[in-house]
Amino acid sequence: MRLIVLGSGSGKPTPGKRTSSYLLDFGGCALLLDCGDGAPSALLESGVDPLKISAVAISHFHADHWCSFPLLIQLFHLLGRENPLDVIIPREGERIFPKILEMSYMWRERIGFDIRWHFWSHAKPKNFCGAQITPRGNTHLRGYRPDLFRHPFARMQCYSLEIVHGGIRGIYSADIGRLTDLDDLLTEPADWLLIEGMHFDLDQFRQWISDKKIGKLIITHIPDSRKGEYFVPGAIIAADGMEIEL
Image (cartoon, rainbow, N blue to C red; front, side, top):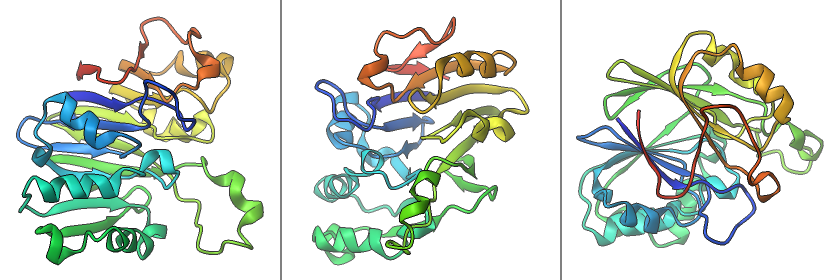
């Protein structure tokens, strides 16, 4: 299993960095985790055939985690994709997300392949590309509660993901609200943890991670204000274009 970092930036656009997007290459097929700014061009630069992607998993609807999705679909169309694409999103996007593709003129008759929509449900596993993916709802979007009376469509759905493939168990934190969001996922050892490096206190992080059994610790989504900060010994600081064997 190989992780390719397509975009490692934070939510603030930064010169020379794309925003959250990661490719898990399983050999015969691949899974795209989030689809932030510049993901399609980064995918082409990686040398991986885009048509190898069988599923796209969107953790939540902050724009830096999904904004290139319509362009990804356009790329698939232009490359002549015929195989169905599985797309897993939070339930709150059930009606809006397909409409975004319609507004982009990416409807079924034009693109030439089916999109099969799936929706995350807390702790209920799904199987794609030979991997079992189990979502865990987290608190990243809880701060929007005061605005919900104006925006009742919002459900504050953000998911961290457990991904198991070929006996290798990994965790993708996506964005979190607090470190304890990941506690249930780390009660047992993980071969790898891809964790965002923005939404927590560094001292608390060092204490929290000290008793976790993790093979490869990869830190991404680090804002400019933390550039060059020390996290913990052995941590891999993600960079656009980085490839990591898991």
